[in-house]
Length: 366
Length: 245
Ligand SMILES: Nc1ncnc2c1ncn2[C@@H]1O[C@H](COP(=O)(O)OP(=O)(O)OP(=O)(O)O)[C@@H](O)[C@H]1O
Ligand SMILES: [Mg+2]
Image (cartoon, rainbow over all chains, first blue to last red; front, side, top):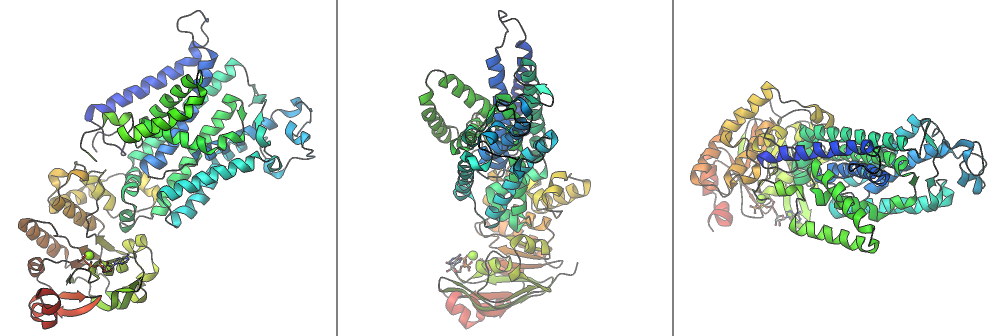
């Protein structure tokens, strides 16, 4: 096999090494952040709490970007609803965190979270059963997005819905879920969502030690997700995905069940997005229906487009760079962000169709 | 490997009132090499669409051995042992020549097997043998995107061979080829036939003559004439609609 770091894009010979270098350097710097956070604030290398918590968030976003890249960059499935899978993962862990508050809520109810007491619930709805167990909640953070993707994907792929139509369906999916989660009678906290978490796995949250641990959990998950995606995209399955992306009907005539292939990658991608959400909620300490907003899903797609779809490193570069710009910009001109995001997308589409990483691309035309 | 017989009986296809195939009947015996000629729009490609499950007939039956092809989807038909080369060559541009053949190689097609697939000695030998046969051994590690038109045609024929089909449907394999390439392709197809059935659609009569096998002439969706190339070339009806122009 030729020297490629990914099947989606062919890179110049030295480029794969450069990318791997950037990747390892980036991960190493991230791994150092919580350590540098422990230095005295006067130290030149001191890293503030803010930087640690923001980077933790970006790590979760990077996992989401990988998930999107796997489906879009490799298999050509442009989902504009991955924010929903992310949010569902976040809610699953959020439910566990709510249960772990126990009697420490404002109303002091031994079982019911505050919002349920406030709404007059007398017992836990069945949708909440089992969530006092962390393993169960964690499993649900993967299974629920996976199931949803399985159903939506099966119906869409079987009817050979592709391209823009699929994007619209997934966008409608996340919008519908947002409306549903905004409702109080869904039993998921309505527009306030979940917050005021106290502990996770016996560990009090809101301490810098807990933050560091959650940060490392996210970083390890990112590494694992990266290895998984690298393994998958370099396997023959990865080449089948690229073939499906570029000429699906031809792949069918070779005897591949493309519905099954696409479904596999879509479900896997949704589960990865769920994992990202599951790590995100305890890190940021809140999850609410805003996470389902259609704009979030679109923004995540822009990360991947900017970084370079069809390369795993591209997804990461995109997630970190676009979010860095966003954090910097919103600190002084939050109103500008959507214009900048839109402009970025247009600019990348026109001038850098292969994204930032595409600059290292072999110059052999399309 | 004893192949199955392909049998089309009274097949009609209607697109918005237009009869692309009109009560077409055709039998291809196992191991037979059959050339199909006919003017543009005669329904040659549509016939292949019917056999491979891309289009459903409005009437008639299509069987391969015991199996009714009109009830099966593309992937299932491909896995029954029917391979197809398209009129417009379609190979996977983002993959190398070698990888294109590897994807086509007969092996379990489900995602899990693909994930765990390791290229063994035997598979590598098969791919290399095919690379030799289609004359692309030197280009194995090049992306398919940079192949010439003729090379893409051969790669597609190579992909067909990797599938080890019992029946190959080859749509206009020499369109746009030089004389030398055409000759090479005719030799390739003759070598393939014998162990399997091959149906070749072609406009190039020199090429059909070079194949030297039974010819079916299609016109307006039905069989106009059938027999040796000399027979059909002298058939007055054929001369009128096709050759005489
Ligand atoms: N999907 C379709 N919808 C409508 N009409 C179609 C469709 N496919 C084919 N046709 C029509 O059916 C007729 C037969 O087409 P077909 O492609 O089978 O011809 P052909 O013999 O392969 O011709 P050529 O030598 O040009 O490749 C043509 O008139 C074509 O326009
Ligand atoms: Mg045709």
